[in-house]
Image 1 (cartoon, rainbow, N blue to C red):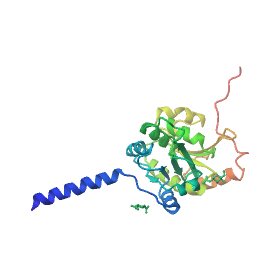
Image 2: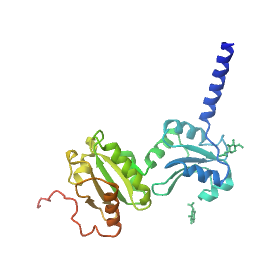
Image 3: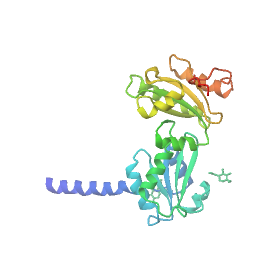
Image 4: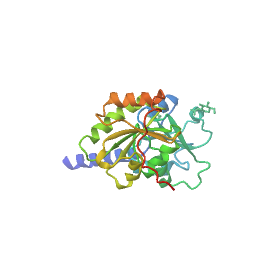
Length: 254
Ligand SMILES: *[C@@H]1O[C@H](CO)[C@@H](O)[C@H](O)[C@H]1NC(C)=O
Ligand SMILES: *[C@@H]1O[C@H](CO)[C@@H](O)[C@H](O)[C@H]1NC(C)=O
């Protein structure tokens, strides 16, 4: 009976869709650790139950930020492992081994949009594209040194360079945040200018150290993993200090 079969398939796909909208449950510390390890950025709701404040809002938010996997943990004994004493929505990321919490006992009027914003700001990856939203998360990180890939989206080696440096980034967890600055965006002309560059000069690689507010450019040439690694190592050994900084516009005498 093709009709009955069709109905049957329809019903099962509706059930599947409903199931998909429920967040996976993590039942112990091992589950939580495995989930955190499964992606560069994840979000976990540590909640009393599915009726709790924050659950509906989290489910709604997660639908809008599909790039970040989310789950819930309703087992209170596990919370202490993450220094949580009350309900929280927590983001874990690998790029700087960071945990960022929304304490639900303090965030009284949290809506899905607020959670979406929290995720977008804190979605720092092994290589993060710089924009007004990620800038907040980048500058809030304890890691104050940025390895910058300055490249024009749409140029022929853009994707390859992004992947190459993204693959190098895990070696420098806690030391550098790798940041992609798309030179093809008008809004990025200012930061490019800070390095003394124009879009036609790209791709280039630079380091920005927020602690000393100092910047360096890797000399022109092939942007290979080896050269960028050596650039990072030179910085960490303190050997870049004597190197000429990226040209600044000569200051006019006042
Ligand atoms: C946690 O337990 C629930 C219900 O017992 C189960 O459906 C779920 O798959 C478990 N989660 C994990 C990650 O094993
Ligand atoms: C929890 O807090 C303690 C003391 O403040 C700290 O040593 C520990 O690293 C924290 N654990 C996590 C997972 O943040």
